[in-house]
Image (spheres, protein in one colour):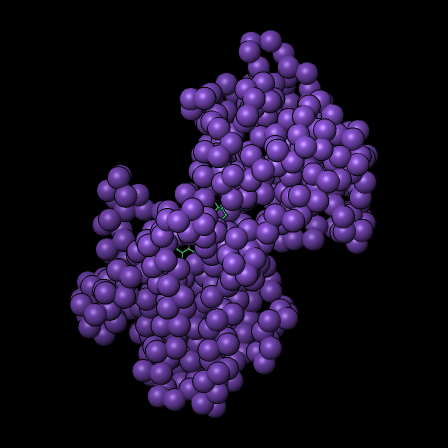
Amino acid sequence: MTDNASSAAPEPGADAVNGGGPAPRERVGVIGAGYVGLVTGVCLASMGYEVTLRDIDANKVAALNDGQVPIYEPGLVEMMSEHRDRLTYTLSLERMLERSEVVFIAVDTPPTYSGDADLSRVMSVVEELEKVGADARHVLVMKSTVPVGTGERVRAELDARGLEQVGYCSNPEFLKEGAAIADFLRPDRVVIGSFDDAQGDRVAALYAPLGAPIIRTSVPSAEMVKYASNAFLATKISFINEIANVCEEVGADVEVVAHGMGLDSRIGSSFLRAGIGFGGSCFPKDVSALKQLAGNSGYHFQLLTSVIEVNELQKRRVIGKLKKHLGTLEGKRVALLGLAFKPETDDMREASSLVLAARLLAEGAEVVAYDPVVEVYDRLHGVSMTATAEEAMAGADAAVLVTEWAAIVGLDWAAAQGTMRSAIVIDGRNALDPREMTRLGYAFEGIGRIPAHVGAPL
Ligand code: UDX
């Protein structure tokens, strides 16, 4: 099948365009009301579709039925309440199948010890579908990130269980946490891999109202687009982080360098922000999974090995910077400003703060932390949380800006300066102005930035 792009854009809620004639109005099911499933379901409801979300967690389903959103994503709670008439939450797969034709699968695929993705939840869905009796009306649409080849495995499993009539497509998600609703409703592209054109058409018709380019391809290619995209973005980040580290050696400023690089349209300016490394639920997991996938086929993906290693080292470089100013960290009080892996989310998966906090504690430092959303996190043993950033900084020997929350970047740094035991700030996200921070009396360091006292133009 060849790739093609379609950009038909009827009004949201109008009959989907499919081969020129009006298509039957599909109802949508979503299996797994986690981050991806909820955003997908709520956004499709906002487009006018009837959506039934099914989860196996009774507490979660009860909370959703009460109008509570179990995750933090800007705008989601409002959209859920605005479109509640088109949203049904249930524990019953049978009920969901009765109420839907296109069924998204959005279950967890966490990494196993070997680095492979754990597909047990996906496979138990297939098992359940056999028991409940999915049929020719249903097209399964894989949203979960799954290794290349999973679609073919699932297809074979469906066939072996007598579910040959049930359709299967791959439709990877490209949702950034904190901007997931915009990413869903205004995507750069929608990728649909199918074994059967007519099944792919049904999924494409669902998305047609968005007017985005739709890439139609095979299932393995669709699965690969997701891994390759995330691995490339992660590579860009590790690349600029290494450039930042070299900038520190040679007296250049990475912010200027990244700006100068990014204006080249072949390079592009996004994902060139140097810092203390990438985290989150996707990049670390997907980069490792792609490396593992290649390795399983006998190919050593050397570049990705370095991307991962650079990212790990980047988180630890802050320790060196702190030691440069403080000498030993034993008994020193260090404030971590921000904990989430990035702003506008409460997600702590693979957050740089976890490694940083653990390293600081291992060095004998006292660690205090503030995050506007993350209040407690079970993996932060030994870290005391404060109610405000100011409280974390008061009496601290040094502060590290870990997550560039607006509330942290915009705090009254002049006032906070006087409350610290020693006014040292390491800006792990290059979110602050080195000159201004120096003017305020801080000993200040970013990542790959020229110290302001050198006086060179930034
Ligand atoms: C990512 C992808 O962007 C999305 O398409 C995919 O489907 C899921 O994974 P997400 O993990 O939500 O989304 O966050 P993203 O905004 O991409 O940032 C990932 C990490 O990289 C964060 O820790 C962020 O701080 C870091 N980052 C990002 C940088 O260090 N520098 C950058 O220039 C960009």
